[in-house]
Image: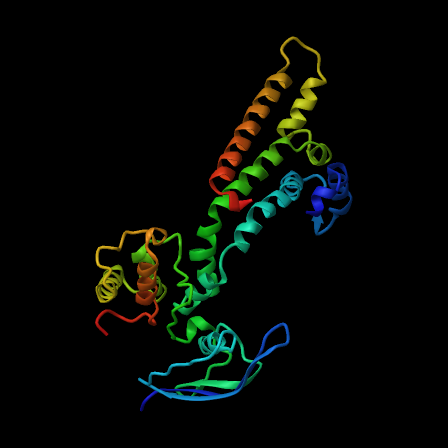
Amino acid sequence: MEKELVLDQVNKTFEDGSLVLKDIDLRLAQGTKLSVLGPSGSGKTTLLRLIAGLEIPDSGSIFFDGQRINDLPPHKRRFGMMFQEFALFPHMNVFDNIGYGLRMKGLSRDRIEARVKEMLALTGLSNFEKRQVDALSGGERQRVALARAPWPRNPGS
Amino acid sequence: MLPLSTSAVTLGFGMIITLDQPPLNLRTSFVLIPIAHALAGFPFVVRSILPALRSIPRSLTDAAAMLGASPLKIAFTIDFPLIAKSLVAGAIFAFTVSLGEFWATLFTARPETPTFPVAIYRFLGQLGAMNHGQAMSVILMLVTALGFVGIENFRKQNPEGF
């Protein structure tokens, strides 16, 4: 059975009292692509942060695969996310940035290396492993963030 | 920053008065000295570390969480390496403050476990051609100066750390 992401009557108000999301209902089946469009400050990022677990909704429920995940911390939700400002770790090189999630998952060095090389090849960054992220151009940083973003999976999976 | 606004004499005297009842009867314990020194150095360590901690973008810890890192792992793999230099600067600050701390220690030090400045104070009170107190003062000045040269070098390399 396909996994499904469901948002049910989700509301979110910022600390300054401004209501940013009101009664959001959303149903997304596995493999669906969805573009969210709107002016600045309309709550697009907040919506993603709520799904990721980086923000807690004031009311309403978020379900994934039939399970209510409102109280599940971000590191247990198994979602990938690419940040607007890339959020690359400045004290790590390209390899360690991309392999960070795999290390957190406890994979062996060999499997991490295989997966990172796979992602580097996909994003056209082969031979960039040892480069410090501070030394990369804007476009290269964006690609590193893209290579790091998917929820860490085993190589080839 | 509260310990800075209090006289070290008050700090030392206050510790002797308050820490003399069980279960914390430390009046005759040498442990009072590190506690007093930690209190004296604490504001400097906080002053060094806090700006560095605040300068870590929230997106970095968010990204680490999204990649499966628990809060504890985020602290060890993201926060700690990013504030390591400030931590070292804070440690040097605390070390130099501790090295020269005199008034609180004068109250808390036992005769058999004097600190460097207390020992200098005692030696200087003794007459004699060979005054060890003067030699110790020179050593104390050199070590303290060395510490502050280190901090100054760090400050130049990491201006945002202060």
